[in-house]
Amino acid sequence: MRALAADGRIAAEYPAVPALLAELSQGDDAFAALQRAGRLLAREDPGAIHALHPGAAPATVAITGHGTLDALTAPLTAEFARHGIPLTTLTGDHDAWQRDLQDTASPLYRPGTDLALCLLDDRIVFGELPVPWGPEDAARAVAAKLALLERLAGHYAEHGTGTLVLNTLPLLRRHLHQLVDHRSRTELSFLWREFNAGILRLAVRHPRLHVVDLEPLIADGGPVRDSRLAAYAQVHLGEELLSRYAREIGHLARTLRGRAKKVLVVDLDNTLWDGILGDDGPDGIAAATTYRGEAFGAFQRTVRQLGSQGVLLAVCSKNDREPVLAVLRDHPDMALREADFVRINADWQPKDGNLRDIAARLNLGVDSFVFADDSPFECGLVASSLPAVSVVRLDEEPALHIDKLLADGWFDVRELTAEDRLRAGQYRSEAERQGLLDTTGSFEEYLHALGVRVELSPVRDHEIARVAQITLRTNQFNLTTRRLQQADVRRLLASPGHLVLAVRSRDRFGDNGVVGAVFARREGDVLHVDNTLLSCRVFARGIEQSVFAALLAHARDTGARTARASYRPTAKNHRVRDFYPSLGFATVTAGGAAPDDAAPDGAEVFFEHALEELPERPGHVHVDARFS
Picture (cartoon, helix red, strand yellow):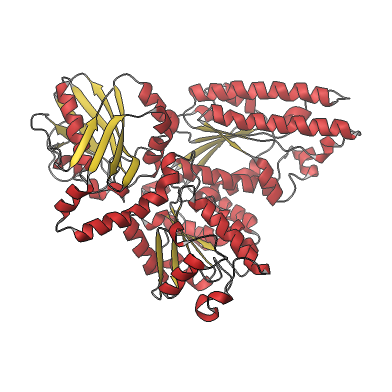
């Protein structure tokens, strides 16, 4: 990083920065190293980086709070850069948090602000108590502060455009022990926990609000603050805590951009179990009953816990396949079994090639993968040849495997949906579909035998989280890649003239749930299709053609004379460039004239359909379409 900065090449080499920061994040002084890197990165112009690398879309974060927060900018810049996001920070005045949340002209409300961070500490309560004070004074103060935060959160939800981030407040010993009797201390501890619980509950009531719980961050790190800096410089939250907080905000930004990982690929020997299967045999490996084996068993249970919440699990191991399957089926120590994995690649091929194979079979990009392995060589190979894969470098100490796997929240989502919990089973059912394909004479026969049924209708309330998730996480069949949060989907549902349609599918092998969405709006006799999305799990089954045949027929039947749509190219959605033309849409410019040539890379392409000859619905698909 220093070399790039010295040569003035950080902007030019920005795609390489996440890998460099990933290396820095592995060391014992990771937070200090990332802070130094963040100071170098903060000198760069996010706009210049974006101009050189269009995929590196900048983020804007507004910061306000009670104490001095100068130490937050550097780690925040580094943590965003770890995820390929150049950062612009807007910092408010000292102790102006209440004014900033009330004033819609403050940076927190500025259009384009992605995250509004309001960092609070215990001084917002204890700084206002009388002297002397007791638990009853603290109770009145926290009740008033919670009510204030409720009002301010509601104000931001109404007028803000980004995501507001609050935090729980640590209770310091220096305040607790100003009460000399144990009963009063117990009362203060109890009401303080209720106060923090109340702050956390605000996030349940306001979908545009996120609360970072500082307690786990404090438990994993050093002191909350340095008392001398707190007294003389009003630094009420220390550098290490702010660095841990910055990491959580980086994870949140990645989640809001739909970059949550989908697949966890694990090694086996000395990763899922203690020992080497090929050398020690099934009786020589352990994931229970032994001192080290128990740590591997705990790691397996954590991996299985992730899998139960929609993370796809796969194996990539240099081993003979049959002994591996025998262990996963029959070994008494195993918490993970063969059925927990959507793919098991156990052979002697290079692991980077095996990861590509798993990605191809799941129809996913390797950028949705996390790879966990104890071998420095294998981790280095994957990191160098597949930089889009997030590598978790485990080591010889199995007790630390869980902490390393969970450190970066790679699989974080805003809300778990019913489809998330069913995802692994849905991917496993693909093997049954593949078996049907292998036994039919042609692809057309396969589609007819599959028995695809599609339901198209307005999004139901319990599906809002899933539809928002589709806009965030779907990249290949996403015509404009406009990302929406749940609040955005609700707003569109409530807007007159808007259609927010869920695409649901099922076939002879099971129910796929909500697999896509269409966002459209009616203006006079024109239907504007703002975006169309479909999960990669159900490509090439005629679903998308069936949906548009129904949509365009409905538009014509209700008086529309034209349908308009657009396609915005990205690095991943090139396969749907011709989707609208395949349905009879003509390519036009923004003004309606025929283009001279294909649009340049990255330029939005516009289409128009006269609704005279409508596309035919594929005969093998049964469609139930309702628009109200």
